[in-house]
Image 1 (cartoon, rainbow, N blue to C red):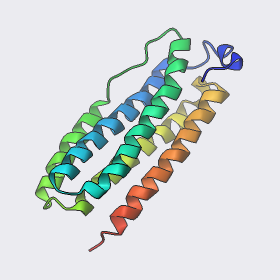
Image 2 (image 1 turned 90 degrees about the vertical axis):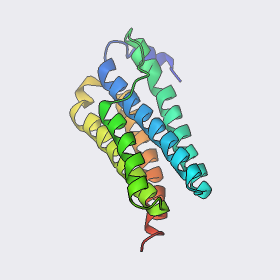
Image 3 (image 1 turned 135 degrees about the horizontal axis):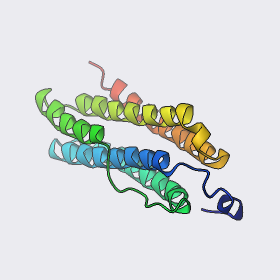
Image 4 (image 1 turned 45 degrees about the vertical axis):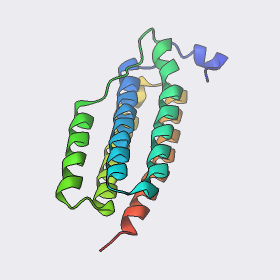
Length: 162
């Protein structure tokens, strides 16, 4: 939600950086939609609530970020990063090659979570001088929430160890 203090932040947030964060969230949503399709087709329905929670989390993150792009007079992106598109293709191939097992799907989802985390960490490290304190804090908070989701995926994967 934008507050009166946020209005004063106009012209101090680089909208391209925020749109990069939105893109990685769009990638995450598309990746988990693909994961839901794969899980459903392989009878792994117990994974669906976790995957759906990750989609909902990214939708919330995007909703929180969009106003800061708009404050700069730009349009929030609805696209994904090329790397995300390649990741989703690879996910489909990997699960099919490795025997359609739950562990393979979770490993692939964890790799997607790692890519998400990496993008956020890069923005926080390299783009912080182009973001207001408030937006920097928001991105850091989102990263913390994502790390919780990452750890859930990792624990689920580890529970399927051979």
